[in-house]
Length: 287
Image 1: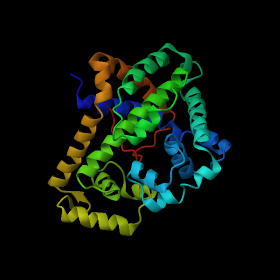
Image 2: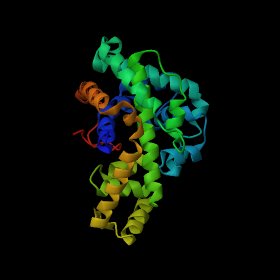
Image 3: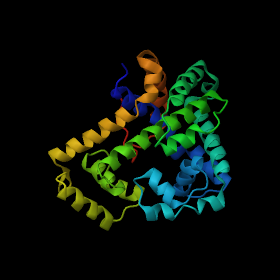
Image 4: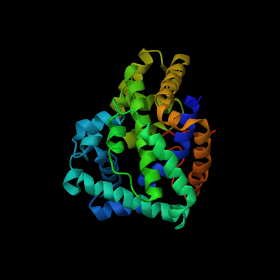
């Protein structure tokens, strides 16, 4: 039977392709052409667009680990610059241009891209929507006709499905958005300073979270205690388990085939320098 480890491996293999929308110059250019300016305004508009013209409260709730004030500096102002429909069109245009550069102009129409799109369509159709707002919003979008864009949209739906489940695993244990970042830094997944900048938390909020997690016995200074390490492992295990459903729709053989097709795609994105080392997404290397 397909295992939770499969969910983690396929996320690790597919996430760099999704993340072109954050790190590729073509995606930033498409956003600027649409009327967005600055990395974070682009990020919040592009990622939140499937939800509609929502306010900062909804974005803070669904993205989970960003400081509310950091979100509010961009949302809802981004909707005065672009409509959600314009943002959605721009993100596909940017990904289209980035993929053609990174993987070559022939790849979008290749047999491999078409096969990937078919496999991922089955998985994305297996997404369980209740309690998964970002996954549901993306699942409700039209599937692009071009295989390479259908691949991107399906991977986006699947990664947001995983993220929604991760938020649930954190919430169940009373781990706040800033607390999740503190634990990620303590686990060595990403540097504290980068996380503070990339998620908008100031020193006071970070320090308060450290104190809270220390009182709970999960931190000793900046290091995880044994109990803290067990909590982090339990959150990740629950995240993998809650992400498993769509991959079970494929089954082991097709998951293995999907991994084989995603491997070269991931390597091409890394070779192009479009997957910054130790970035805030915190994706492990696939086994």
